[in-house]
Image (cartoon, rainbow, N blue to C red; front, top):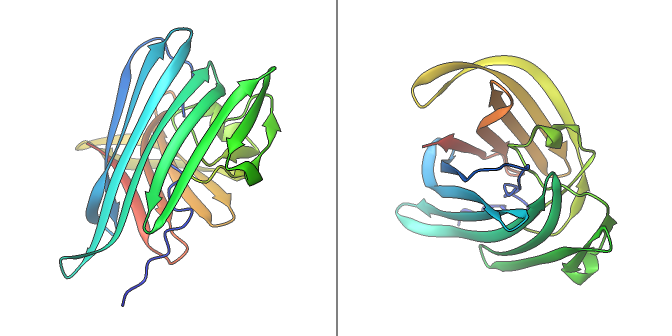
Amino acid sequence: MLSFSFKNLIFIILLLPYLSFAQDWNFNVLMDEKLIGEHSFQLKEEDKFNQLISNASFKVTLLSIPVYKYKHISKELWNKDCLYAIESSTQDGGDDFKVLGKTEASNFRLIEPANKTFVAECPMTFSYWNPLMLKQKKLLNVQTGEYVEVEIKNLGKRSIKVKNENFETDLYQVLAPKINIQLWYKDNKEWVKLESITPDNHRISYILK
């Protein structure tokens, strides 16, 4: 039977910069150029914070038989560029994950999972749409609760097509253990595309609808 290694695959979830208006991102998700699901992000102001709802659903089939399912939903509160609180739940194949954290006394404390507790003054997740993410040395994985060291490289200019239009973009690469992600931005660091190579060499692509 074909086996998929999707552990630590979804780093998407990734949160948000400070914005003063509602905004949505809606992506089709492909694996090796085959549509497997979608991932949506909804951002709005919530009192003095920005609230982000992230919702993903994937299904991989082999000969029309489902061999892998993934569901993720998270709610994050952001205070400008700092993560203030997070609650997420994930079903990754046969594994379940839950992450819960909040800011206490000017420090962020990860409550669940308990064995991943850390303290940081202004943590960020894999918040691809926020240019400040590209300057970080550590990022929070909102699926697993791991606060991982990352290396982020600027790979220069690239011309790509987004929604049937050609754009000049800046390409970045995010590297960490079991993480190999490429990100495309246009204009003033507007996130428009993502690709990730999984540990078992599958290519995951996020394409704006």
